[in-house]
Every structure is written in structure tokens, then in C-alpha cells.
Amino acid sequence: MLDSGAGTALPVLRQHSWEKFTVPLRPCIMDRTAAAPTRRVSSLPQFNISTSTLAFDQHFTTNAKGILLLAEILTGMLVWILIGGTDYFRLSTLCWVMFVSILLWILTICLFIIYLTGVHSRIPQIPWTTLSLCFNCAAAALYLVTAVVEAFCVGQATRGRHNYNCWAASAFFAFLATLCYAGSGYLSYRLWKTTEEEQ
Image (cartoon, rainbow, N blue to C red; front, side, top):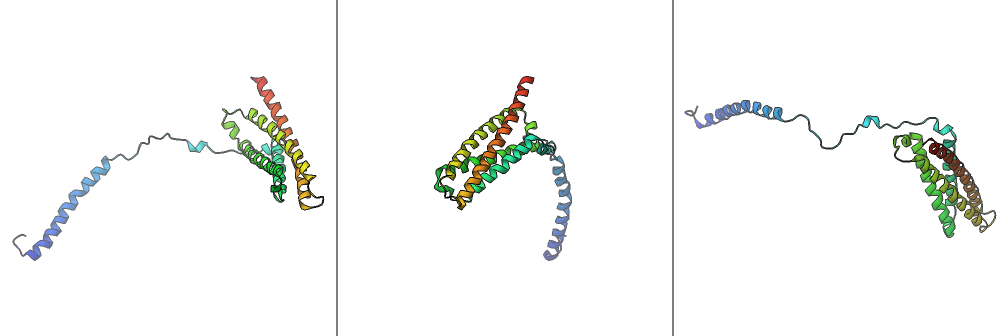
């Protein structure tokens, strides 16, 4: 092939060199991939995700604790919505009422979700009975002060005006929320007392 003309030798040389080098390279590439490990070993801990599904307690909203938590969420929401629709920012006491009612409303929703999904039974390291007792007693005390402060603010508004009506209704619902938190505190106390006696 080298004796023939340069024009014909070059294409033939390319064709032969292409066929020569492609055939033996395939086994080399296959050997390298076959030698490589097919599975990576991770140094991170493996978590079993399939067992972390949340189960809803269908009977929670029908017992006394669930009903009181729903009543606390509803009355707490009405307290801050009724104040929020007025010129509450002119009185610093009503700003404090808004802070307390929104904070306790959010915490009550979190507690409701924890009990509804059964998270409290999956994390036994936290003393849920004691935590619930402390939260409900503190919330009842805060809402009692809030309701009294708000009832005092109603006297400063002009009777029959929008602010007066909203503040009076909000004070009423603040007293209802106090009763709901006191009831939840009583149920939590009874549960806490029985748990302490069993230990």
C-alpha cells in the first residue's frame, strides 16, 4: 500500500488505521467499566423514610381535649381579627393584646397539629403532659389579663362606633378563650396527676 500513489495510500491508511484502533479499544473501555464499582458506599447514615409517615388520630377532635383546642383556636382567632380591624395601634395596651392573642393562637395551632398527627407519641423524650399543663395555665393567665385590659379599653371608645363594637366583641371572646384554656389546663392537670401517681 505504501508503494501506490500518495493520494490513494492516505485514504486506505486512514481506513485501515481506523479499523485497527477501534476494535481493540472497545475491550479496554469495557474492562475499565467492568472493574469500576457499581455501587457507591455513602458515609452518611441511612434513614428509613418509609416508617416516618404521619397518622391522624381520627377521634382526637371528638374528645374533650380536641374540642377545647379547636375552641381555643376559634376564639383566639376572633380576638385578634376583631382588634385588627380597628385603630388598635393608637393604644399601646391593645398592641399588647394583639401580640398575646396572635402568639397564643399560633402556639395552640402547633399543639393541635402535634396531638392530631400523633407526634407526641413518637417523641417520648418530651414530657408532653407537663408541657401541656404549663402552656394551658400560662395561656389562661395571659388571656385573663388580656381580657381585663381589653374590657378597660372598651370604656375609652365611643359607644356605638366601630371601634367600640369590635373591642367589646373581642373582649367577650377573650373571656371565652380564658375559659377554654382554663378547661384545658384542668384536663392537663388531671392527666398529669394520674401519670405522676402511676410512676
